[in-house]
Length: 294
Image (tube, rainbow, N blue to C red):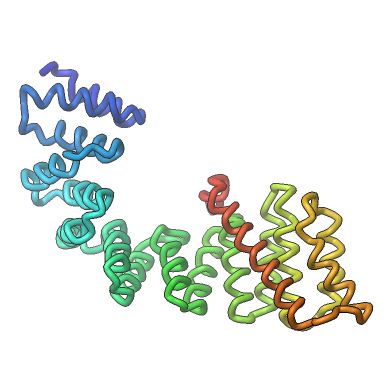
């Protein structure tokens, strides 16, 4: 093995050349098969590439360095990537034995517990992780999603508010607060959050989504006059006709010609809910908002 092999493999890995890093590390391992540094690079690169033996290489590193936090964390990440949830959880528990406040391990155990059907344990781990992190941590973001899926919107909202406070320029965080506030009928908070989303989101075509949220708030609290004003405003910026059904319903209602109002109202609220879901999906895809709290 060349003296430069570990350095070359490490440099390639750090540059994102995972295949080159793995090849360089594997070449070095032909001469020194028990080199833990080369095994780590080969294993971590293999995880990125989806190679079958990556986790076992990282297990060898953990066996050689049982008191090293990073070795167990790497192994846990590799096993989780392969869907070996129980084994991954065991590795992350070893991390916590060595470093009880390790946020990443607590977060990973939270996800593992949720996957295996233990919602209470999942929440406990994630809450512990969130306590150890500042602001809009991965754990806190996961808590919002987990509470939402578990049908606990009030708890989800409390976590979402903490994220929005820690990341005040993050439009996706403001949107979570808006959606959850609407769900639990905190209409004033929902309206402020939709307005905040509108201010923060600089994509012109997204303005209509924030307006749809504001319309939905006013309709839910029975202020159809204000809802109509907002619908007309939304129609003015809507290039794709998404507001037409909502505006038609509100104008017909104002004129007293809304037909079967209960049915039509249900359809319009369904359209507004779909608009909100689309807005959330767009933000989830838009990496520009991921670091909005920096």
